[in-house]
Amino acid sequence: MHRVKPLDLAIRVVIIAIALVVAVRVVPAARFEGEFWQLAAVAAIFGLINAYLRPIVKALSLPLNLLTFGLVGLLINAGLMLLLAWASGQLTLDFTLAGWPPGPIDLDVIVAALLTSLVVSAVSTALALVRRLAPGM
Image (cartoon, rainbow, N blue to C red):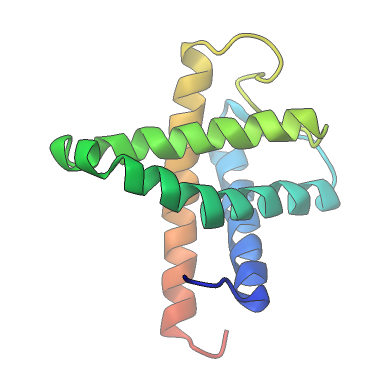
């Protein structure tokens, strides 16, 4: 079993926090109106979701992901972003996607989740690559 080291988890949280800030600035429907500690909490929640829940969901959806050439992976990422927005709403951390939560999930919310997850994935991948290229970071 792969064990996540505390320093690696902290670095992931910082990378995700930076990626969330970029996503909130780039995606018009993604909003964060809280304080810095709330952003850190949202990033920590997303780091935990990505570290523990994402591998399980990806493993279970692997056959379908192979059939759709990875498109299911995009939907999984959007679903995890919706889970993050829901958890943020439950903890009053001020992260919303197209005004959700509260209210029903409509097409605007799904599109916002897809776009936000794409931006977060791209930025966090780029930052992780920079971290690997500069081992002292």
